[in-house]
Length: 261
Image (cartoon, rainbow, N blue to C red):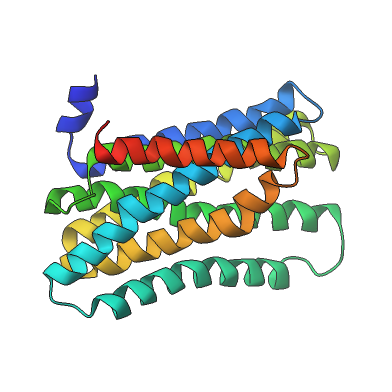
């Protein structure tokens, strides 16, 4: 089964991987059928592990390959990587500003529903692009850009998608939506990941010169999500040291995959 996946072209690999991350969002959203509220310790643990994996993946699978590819193309590496990283973070900041400003101004259940869903969707777009870029960059033989690294990146995103899906559907249930409605909204927030993954891999395969920018962009978006969302949310737990340790374990796991252990 693993050999079959490795033999697929990057487009199919990215699509399958992003479908898996989408399924994890669906799984998290489905928790609304089982619980009125989620176990915070479990969710924070998942976020902590995911933070470590995604941080390592951003560095080893995206940022370092961006630097190498930029050097090989004779591009101004510092400028290229810096622009990519900053745009990755700025896109998410802009998305939050837009969703906060243009969603219904009056405080209402509909506003809270739209704001929460829009925010998650905007964050899922760069995550999907990151998956596509990670798989697409493998064909260029860049050091650090491997199928195993791309799979690890997708795994980190998938892990954090479970609590993310629950974070949408369960609050929406508390806002008065029926369980199936809350589930559908939560699930739909992840649909953009397969779509954006395909866009990411197509861009990489068709326009080689933008690869360093896309890799750095995806890295910046991942790092931004880790710093702004995953770490603060997981560290709201009383067991901060344990969650931090789980983050380190996630980082080490990704490091082991990167160096081939």
